[in-house]
Length: 453
Image (cartoon, rainbow, N blue to C red; front, top):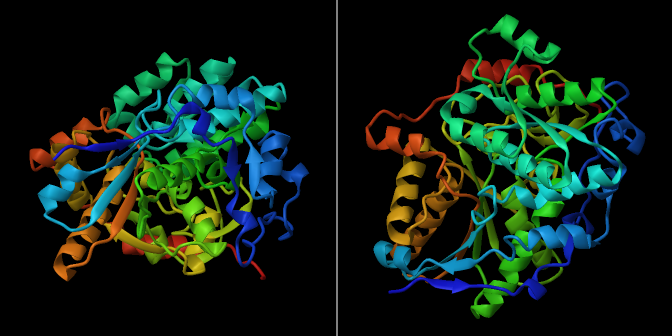
């Protein structure tokens, strides 16, 4: 049984990004200034972001045109293919139909360049030549390094220390594109030095790395900050994924009953799911949407929906999101891109509205699912994407048990070519399911900021 591939022409690539905020039944809670408790304005965000991105962050327009220069770069790898996983269906002996959107075809090997290119473009338009950022597993840092090389922008990446050591080739990839990569927490910033003073052996976290990157941008007017997930404008840029998938599903004469994405900060999940959620909200077909996170960092499934800082040093505004507390440091799982204490405000909002169902999966089961997928479909997935694969397989097996046929679509957000140590450790029996500290979580949640709503 052969694999089936659905492709679009360059002329069919989306010319606009889709903004879910235009279709929400209730608006997402505002971002607040931590000192005043009042909604932030453009001037509050100007030290960090170019004004064009700030305007996209707060926009309520349904569609925002993609500049031609960005479209031209997108054409290096977009439209990305959609596959029907017939071989996996056969292995599972399921009546379900399984499709996956394959984002690993980008130069950086993941979905991240969809927003990295856009952010680099808008920074360059405003005369910015230096960007600081953080990265977990390295996919985002690789993408921004790639985008920086295209626009002649200096990129400084604070890479979570455990991933810095687990994934050295990601660091080499970033440096090949011209970025400077620093293991976080580092001695280069006050935020990093403070963490190291308390815990010299800290494995780091995305919250800590964000603090370092934000501090650099705040202290240097020549530098802006760039984030690869969480923020509204990042979710916006990623919606090329879902828009293409909708057109490709139409090619297939099909429509998903279930849409699945892994979730760390929310970008690849939102990129696939938001266009389908928007279609449902506008009176279109119903779809069940599943967000899958690691049990070692169960933000959506164990965290409260509350205002919190996006970083550990409390340099960012307050956003309402599902959170484990800004000081929570997740265990060092191999899915480094999912080790974030919070979740995108827009993803959190649609979960709170009941439009998305979250679930958490353990590391070992996800790697087993990734290996099963690789042996059937030929692609070795990133550890993060394995969470979506695990859920897709579970849903397909549920169809088998129930004797029902459903159409399942998931986002295969990147390849695992630089993550083979995770697979090696798993196959040698040297990997275990990581457990977070309940005491540390309780302490972190106890320090949530008090916000009058």
